[in-house]
Image (cartoon, rainbow, N blue to C red):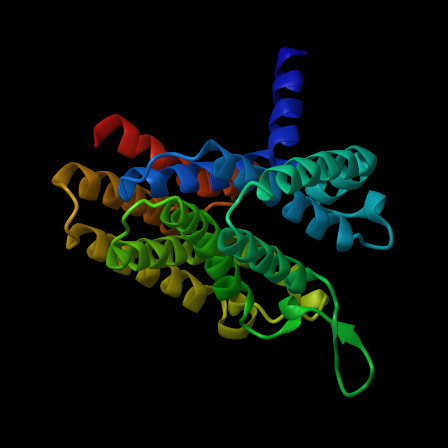
Length: 288
């Protein structure tokens, strides 16, 4: 009974996107830490609420014809709890909207732009020559880099923009460097999710990087991105403790992705890969 309750709690955290929302908060907090900016809890709250709402909305929007018959446990769980997810999404949006009006106008525009980018990825607002509607996710090879850009803008640029407009002096080279680090890391840990979903993506006609290049090439790209991330971190001007903490997580992530050959379960993708975003922050807090 205890094991069943524990598993239900794990499912709640990952399938309701609470975990990924915590990852966004951790990445925002990492930005404050690495750039030595005073922490703004309103920004961190918005990051968590907006991420929760956007991920839930994208999942609900992609509802299959018969979700109860889906071979994916995640899909069955989501649409058994669809009403609750709508409620969570609405509450998160209300909190984010209420706090956003306390932002400076430039930060609010950036927040709206990032939100629009997130919606544009999922909402079928484009139309092809045959009159079929599609969203940006249907554009071949775009998904990984689009997601990486959205995360870099929201978790780095938004905290920086609000701190800058509050009068905090900003050095923009470290800001751009951190955005590149977030971009590289997010793209790298997203590739295994696309490898996992390769057959489903082929079925729905989504041309992700693994579909276009193949699984081996996708794994190689993942390794290259993490190697660039690790090398760049080690050559940066941060203290040795910071460099070793971030590079250590990047190497751990590479090992988790590239070394195991056996079948990986649901919890591996969410707690191990997404959890690396939280582990980065914890390593900096503990050792740097």
